[in-house]
Image (cartoon, rainbow, N blue to C red; front, side, top):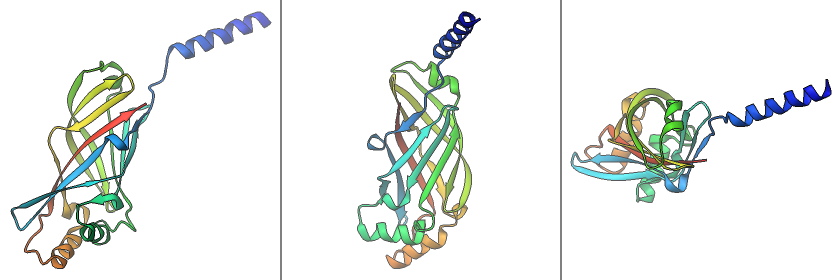
Length: 194
């Protein structure tokens, strides 16, 4: 009886070890970037970015990315402060978040050096509002423990959909600008490791 129990436990351990779970992937902030473009006076486009991103792809292949809105970098300190205060209202809404689900098989079967283009359906949670988005990306497996996800083309954030038109108008007033576009192209390049 005792011997049979040991054999059963051994078989369970072997079975458990031989069927590994899908490991979680963690976003590598030092090798990731999210950027957006603003257009003022109808013709002047400027690049901006965020310094702090966090996130993961969990065991169920659910993608979660969080953007620290207070880490915005527009290359002009006073504009950074005005964006945090009037547009993002970062003291109330500290982060913007993106969630989506990937195909589990992709992460398991993608070979090192291989890439895959796809459209990801997800949701953006920003400024207290949530909107569905479809983002065209390319996923590249850089090594056994590193993947890169890049946007193929920008996706667009509509100011009115997230309730930030008043904040943009305040920026326009403070900077004495005739216009700032309410549609903002966003792109990213994010690296995940495990």
